[in-house]
Every structure is written in structure tokens, then in C-alpha cells.
Length: 153
Ligand code: FAD
Image (cartoon, rainbow, N blue to C red; front, side):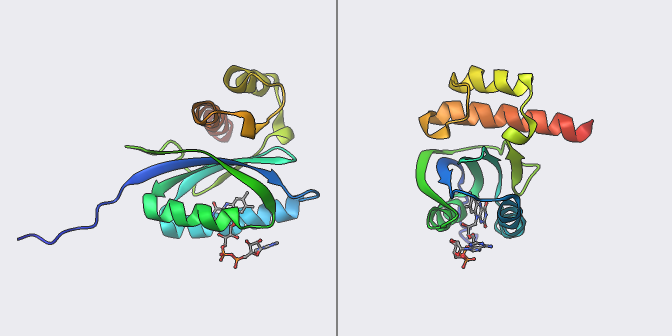
């Protein structure tokens, strides 16, 4: 009989949180540097959108790894009020290009990006905890497209 291989369920988890006040560029880059290295080891990909007082992050990868990572992230004192927006099984990844892509929302706020937010969230400023799971995923997927185009240009 062939050996039983562990089944790997891929999931995508999306959450919103409030950034610790005064969190600066250095703290953000430090989070991203260690996140990118660890995520690569764990087979996790994703996107982290930062808007000054809020984070919206999507994590994709093996269910066990994503669950454990979310529990670690939720304990991190660099943010608070982590709110799970959704977690779903996926067949393929939407953020496969990045072990973690950081997007500073206010750093590159163009008319196109404002329209993107209005289309998905119907709010003028990024308030991720008001979003449904579907809105958050639609917003982050299109934001990733913007980033890919910008990287290619
Ligand atoms: P440790 O490194 O032992 O840290 C324990 C605690 O110390 C942390 O929870 C934090 O409160 C604090 N801390 C750690 N480093 C610093 C620092 N440089 N400055 C200030 N305080 C610090 N990690 C990932 O691996 N992948 C991710 O995608 C990811 N995304 C994140 C997104 C956000 C918005 C935040 C705030 C953190 C994210 N992290 C991510 C970091 C994650 O929360 C953990 O710090 C990291 O996974 C290491 O886990 P650990 O248990 O070894 O914590």
C-alpha cells in the first residue's frame, strides 16, 4: 500500500487591525523583513496594506501554517484589535508573487486608487474593519494588480 501523505489544504485568511500609534517607517520595514523571510520558509504568500492607523492583511498558504501565523500576529503589540474578516479554502493563490507585499496606502494615493477603494468598500478612507470578507479580498486583489503593473513599468 502506498504511504499516506499529509493532505495540504490551502487557505486564505484576511484580517484587519489598528496600528500602534506612532508606528514609523522603520518599524514597518522591520515587520516586513522578518515576515518575508519566515513566510518564505513556511510557504506563505500575501499582501499587507498599511494606511497610517490600520492594517489589512491577507495570508495564503497551508492551513496549519496560516492558522499558527495568525495567532502569532494577533498577539503582536505593534497593533491591536485584530479582527478576522474571513478565512476560506482556495485552489490557487492570488498573491503568489510575494512572500509578503507591503503597500503603503497613503504613500501612493492616486485617483485610480481612490476609485478602487470606493468600488470595493464604498468609503473614501481605508477602514478595513468595516469591510466584508468579499470586499476586502476584491480590494486587495485589485491593489495587487496595481502593484504588479507598477513593478513592471
Ligand atoms: P517574537 O519575534 O518572539 O516577538 C514577540 C513579540 O515581540 C511580538 O509579538 C511583538 O509584539 C514584539 N516584537 C518582535 N519584534 C519586534 C520589533 N522589531 N519591534 C517591536 N516589537 C517587536 N510575521 C510573519 O512571520 N509573517 C507575517 O506575514 C507577519 N505579518 C505581520 C503583520 C503585522 C501587521 C504585524 C504587526 C506583525 C506581523 N508579523 C508577521 C510579525 C509577527 O507578529 C511576529 O512578530 C513574528 O511572526 C515572530 O513571531 P514570534 O512569536 O517569534 O515573535
